[in-house]
Image (cartoon, rainbow, N blue to C red):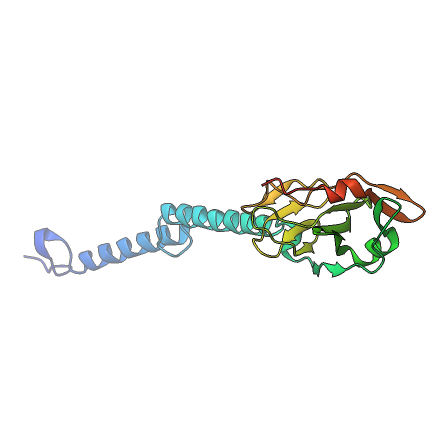
Amino acid sequence: MGKHKGRQGDYGEPAGGRDRSDRWEDKRRRFADERRGGSGLSPRFYVTVGVVALVIVFVGLMTFRNSGTTTPTAAAAVLQQVPASTAATENGKVGITVQEVTQKKLVAWDYKKGNNTTPLLAYTTPSGVVKVATRMCEPCNSTNFHLEGNQLVCNACGSRWDLESSRGISGGCQAYPPEVLPSSVVDGKITVDEQKVATWKPRV
């Protein structure tokens, strides 16, 4: 018999054949990994990561958008009502100077005649109109108010009204804003008929 050229493995495979096969398989796997980016992670993993990232971005944008649409009163300065100094009752008219109202923003005083007292309020709307109203949040019987931006707020119950329209915004008493009284402006003073003030009664 001639000399064997090499040592035979099982099933007549030359020794080292399995090692070469294993090395080939390793190369094939590495090549496949490199084609996938070298991480060995499946495409499904990247799709999932992408979807999660999009959700996070969407939620962040919505949060930012909502934070930018808060009501103007959220950071508005609070202006409490202040006592009037020019309010007076003359010739059947209850009035106050427009200058005082525009300067102080929210002015309060009481009309008194005999046993009758009517709390009054004067303010300037965002459009520049000066108004006189009864100074009472009728359901809770409060006579103290303040301004926050374009809103009139009851100090007792926290009910809010739009300063321009008197429309209720929030709170348990919002259906009863301080009642705006018919008025006129003459010679720098806003006045209301005394009879209207003297006979005013709460609605509730």
